[in-house]
Length: 347
Image 1 (cartoon, rainbow, N blue to C red):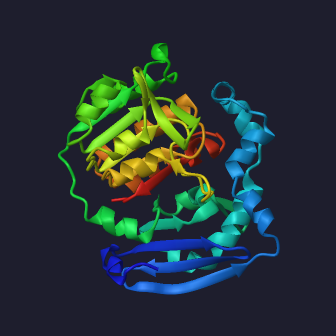
Image 2 (tube, one colour; image 1 turned 180 degrees about the vertical axis):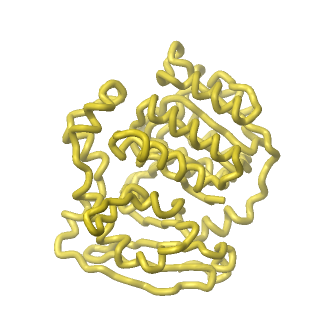
């Protein structure tokens, strides 16, 4: 565990759950602004079975043979009707949330710190099944993720920039996603700003000093000397190493692109993630994606998120309300909203 003075930075009515996965157990640390409330541990009969469950959304893609971004994009209704997600999402809820639910109940905000392979799991999409009814965890409480408890302390001490926004989109005609240009124009309007074409020189020149940065494009994954995922711009790929060199004290960075969230959890592989690079550069909050995304559901989620943010809701509450809008108004698979993670501060 980290230094105790970090506990005092945790707001009232907020809970932190820190999870450690060992060879045969999961340890759960329940934390609030007074310190560690409790420690629970659960022993496994079959750790490999549980590790398989951790790849829930990826398993869905493989099982339904959606092997490319375009197939996912073109088959939203079919994708949503083919797969019943309840079993693994319920199993994971019963294992990871049910033992600590009494601490979560009636709280206003939940932070989850998932170490190792647990970072693959969308806790916010886990399902509570009770009295014949099923409820996603995100329906009960806003959720944010943290790489570690020490990062929470660092982010709390970061200064914020002005209210200026940088909105960047790569149009489809220049190789971007189907609705990237439309999304960028929408976000710019809601932020009282103007959209920029996705060019590296624009980003590197304009990113510092902005309070909100929104990027709508494709991600690019490379495995040459090291693994990294970059952002596709018209004039090249924006690399995590380039982002880390900047001083980005943004309150929010929204990465509207495929698979921008995770670092590789295998310690033998050197990997640089987009999310980590923005956090290291000083961003207080990053919204990123675990897996490939589809343009239309993403556009709707982005629109709802920024409308909520403009109304004065917190970042975590804004994302929660956007995800609830999709849950309540559409019969889409939770993949389409559950792949979005809020990393950092939820305020």
